[in-house]
Image 1: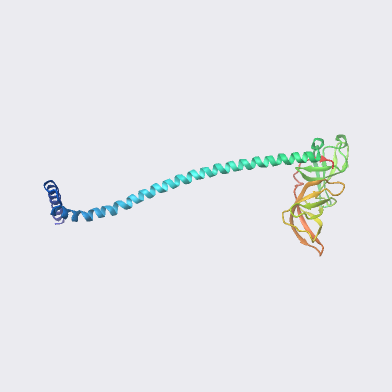
Image 2: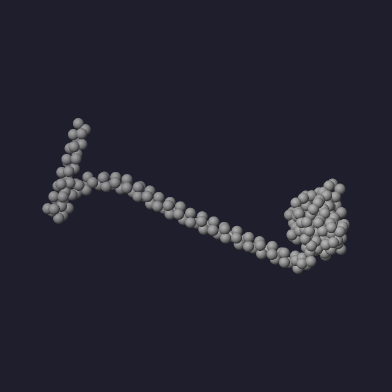
Length: 266
């Protein structure tokens, strides 16, 4: 029954289409059959549009997504290239700064006459921080020469023998250096306390300004240590009385790992 009805529909549709083309060939003006056919085909065309349009829009979105993905990939590669270039430039700048720093340090302390020595032994106890170097009076080493490593103060020579010398680290309690804070300009006395990772900046006035992580540098006042050598960074600070701060410093040099130093005279 259903199959027979379906066949009737196809036959009727075929008849309409045949009559439509006959009408188009015989009559130039729009006829009844053409109008009837338009009514019949309108829902079909409308349905087709509803089906085709989302597919077309979906394809357009896919194209847009592909374009965006391609653009993102290209911009990511460009960003990576710029990052690589930036790292190279920073590395070059850091190298230039190191060269400039070395030239300035060499000019300041005449490293042409500096003596490079190796640290051959350490005495790090609660009673003192000392080290021995592999050169002595036979190599023109003299007492009170300054031991320096990469523009940072390591210590000073306290005893000289023919083939070796004994020196004190700046972390030792006998080592006291006039110093100032780079950012704020606060002044004080850098003192070792026989600890490897902590020292003090003493006699800092309560009128001075302090800042955490500020760099502490030798001021050059006194008879032993020259100006401009790195000592440490401020860890923390507090007022101990109405007129002074207590300032804890982390040394810039790790006395447990430094293996050589340069000896210079002030």
